[in-house]
Length: 179
Image 1: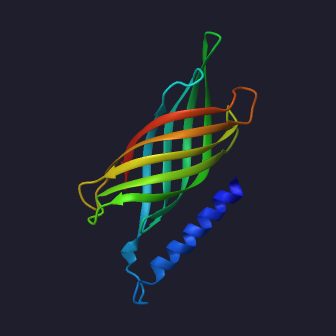
Image 2: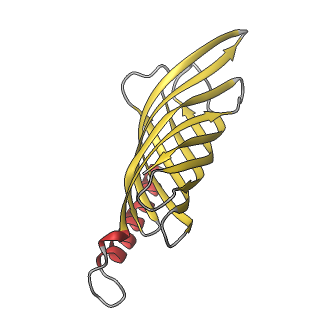
Image 3: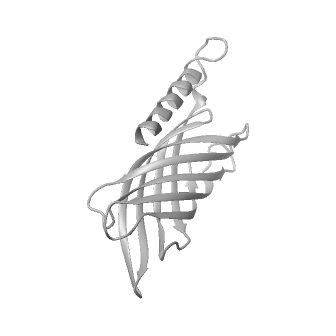
């Protein structure tokens, strides 16, 4: 699975890099075709199999026209109600992602990217897991240089690597800001 995603990202990088380097006339493309991605979101989910999640994620990377390539860091807390006792487990993850804007306006004030990302634990988390995540966001700002509101909804499959909890699927929402 990891090899397949890395191959998709390599194809996206190659295609985007060719678009950025040369325009249709063979001249160097404008520098404004490459944008910086930076967004901070609060993520929260509905309860599934007695577990819910909430926390913060930070995405940072580059956008080439409509294709996004980014890294992600996340601090998440998973709350589990087991045998009448409520417990929680914290995780820190680092990952990579790729996205594609299905809608953006010419003024660059509104974007709707679909994103896929995957991440792995760092440090010594309470719950050792990795995840695969598919989401859609709507980012809107007053102008192209303003901070925008980022609203998202997604599905995350968490692959448990410990005895603490089985694998989980979460439907989640996110609210944050994007630069």
